[in-house]
Length: 376
Image 1 (cartoon, rainbow, N blue to C red):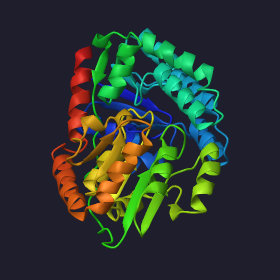
Image 2: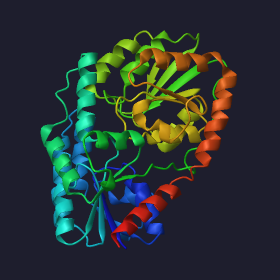
Image 3: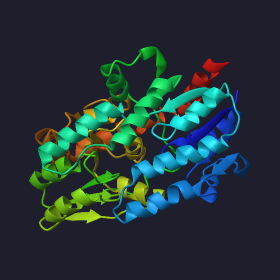
């Protein structure tokens, strides 16, 4: 049994490629990233099929504040469909595999679609509703992206999702549960571990991710502003999208908020390790891998119900799980941590113990390999 993996961006396919290769299951990893960046992550160079002309221009435009998602996904899909290596199964990132999946099935290959978020119809509805509540201009996900992905759903033999939240979204849309596979992601315990100690006289909160509507950063900003602590600081690690940049600027005028942009894994590890709490208040997030990374650094996590947090930790033990979009609940949990160093210490130890029992990415690799075996 041999599999081809295709994804225009990084996601978790780098780690998956290394897992499948170690089991003798990887035929090729087709990526929009330059070959040198992928080979450093454990995949042999002869297994990599790099298509940087599909994705690198999109990344450049993104940094300039221009987001041409349709161009990125359709270009990658078209080129890969014309150069697809032969194998037994194609496992492709949702949204970028309509033509590629069709070509794979034409050749008799199985077609597995990996959807890291909720059903795109549910995702689109959540984001439109959130934008309306926050007064942010957002017309919805591009209709071409939505229609293409929904057609992928119809054609795929199986769809993998990483959390019960994502699974429920497909069931809500009437999807056949027999075609769904729930496979949570892993964490690289060799890269994420406690590397620093939080300052005893401060309360530092860290967020890592794309700073946009979907990640619920506006809820974190409002909760953090009301948080009562004499030396509080919010560290935001990630690219800031334009609508949130204007909102963020207003909060930065009156609060200690540090925005770093993109940083290395080592820097993320240090930021997480030196913080008292990690917050992921997403309104829609299939499974926030950053939660696993924070736990591996010994940092208590406060996340919304729409992040897959319930797959990873217990509310009140390793961290807190709050209702999505609930500023008051988010403030309450942060205040509890800010007021109780012993609670931070207890949750930190529990987070480390729990995440070390997950088994890194090996468990994820085992589950994907078992799923691929269904095509024998």
